[in-house]
Amino acid sequence: MPEFQRGVLDSLRQPLETREVSVARANAHVTFPANVQLIAAMNPCRCGHLGDPALACSRAPKCAADYQSRVSGPLLDRIDLHVEVDPVSARDLALPPPAEGSAEVAVRVARARNIQTARLEGTDARTNADIDGELLDRHAQPDEDGRKLLLQAADAMRLSARGYVRILRVARTIADLAGARDIGRIHIAEALSYRRQPPRA
Image (tube, rainbow, N blue to C red; front, side, top):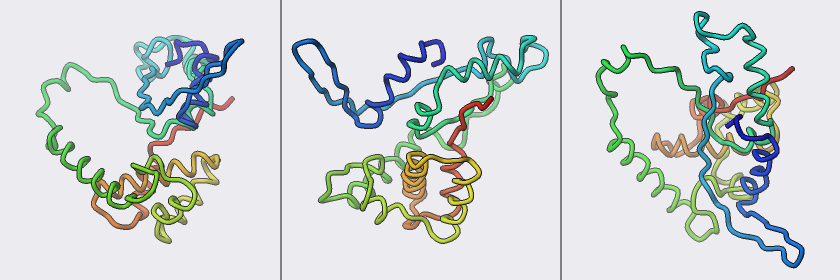
C-alpha cells in the first residue's frame, strides 16, 4: 500500500466513507456507486525485515516510521480491520493444518449474515457495516463491562468518532459470529485489537 503516492491513497477516503465516487469534468459532474470491500497489504518497512535483527537495514526503526507514514491516519481510520501477520518460515509449512478449515468458517459467516439479515429486516441496512445513528444505538451497544472498556480505550488510543463507531460495528459482527445476542467485553476487546494507530513522530 505505501508504494502508491499518498495523494492517490487519500483519494480513497471519500469513496470509503460515502460509498460513492464523484467524477468532475468541465461539462458534467457524475456520481457512481462505490460500495467496495478494500483489502490492502503493506510491509512494516521498505525492506520488509523490520523485526529480524539479522536482516533489518541500518535505518531501523526510523525507516519503518517513514514508510508507514505514507498511509495517512484518516485513511487508516476508515479501514475496519488491521491484522499484523508474522512471516511464514519453511518450518511453518510442515505444521498440521488449522483445526477450523474454510468450510467451517463459511458456515459461521453464513449464520452471522442470516442473523444480520433478520435483525435489519425492514431497514435500508443489509449488514452491520451499514448501521449508523439510531440503528447503531439499538443494535450495537455493549453491556456495561464492554462500555467501560471501550471508553477507556477511546481515551488511551485517542479514537476518533469514526473509529469509535467502527469498533462498535466490528464488535457487533464478532458477537454475531460467536452466536451472542449481546456485545460483551470480550467482543469489544477483540474489535479493539484490530485497530492500528498511525505512526507518531
